[in-house]
Image (cartoon, rainbow, N blue to C red; front, top):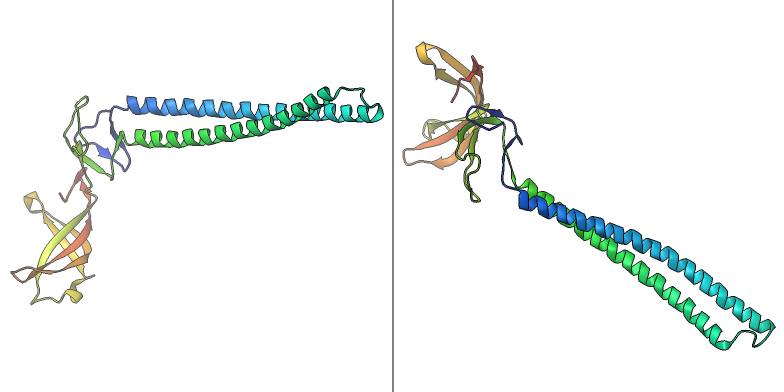
Length: 232
C-alpha cells in the first residue's frame, strides 16, 4: 500500500524501500560462497576418513612385511619394505593435509557467514521504517524518485503525547517549588467549548531569560474527539 498523508503507523512500520537489487545480489553471492565452503568442508571430512583408512592399510602391509622377513629373512625385498614405509608416511601426511583443508573450509564458511550478516544489514538499511508511532503528515518523495543520504522522505508526527511549554517569572516562583506540581492545560475549542488535560511539571529550565522568565514543561496525553486529535 502506498504511504500517503493521514495514514496512521506504528513503530517499525515499513514506509518504503530503496532499490536493493545490488545489495540482494551481494547477499545471494555470499550465500553461494558459503555453500561452496560447506561443501569443501564435507569433502575434506571424507578425505580425512579415506586417508585414515589408507594409513591403517599401509601400516598393516608394512608390519606384515617386517614379520615375514623376521621369519624368513629376504623373503620380501628391502625396496618393497622401503616403499611400504614411505606409503605409510605419505598417508599420514595426507591425513594432516585433509585436516588442514577441512579447517580452512570451516574458516571460509565462517567468513562467508559474516559476509551474509553484513549483506543482511545492508539490505535492512534499504528499508525505510517509521521510528515512532504516529501519523504521516507529509510525503516529500514519490515512487521512483532519486534520493540521496539524508534527504527527508516523509514526516511522521506522534500526537498521542505532546509537550506543553510555558514561562514563569523567577521573582514570583522558585524553581524547586514548581517541579512536579500538578497543572491543568485548557484548550479553547471553536464555539466556546473547552477541553482540559491534567499533567505535572516534568522539567524546569535552569536558564533565565533577560526578561526574568524561565521555561517549564509538562507532557500531556492527547485525546480524540470524533476521530480527531484535540491538541495539535
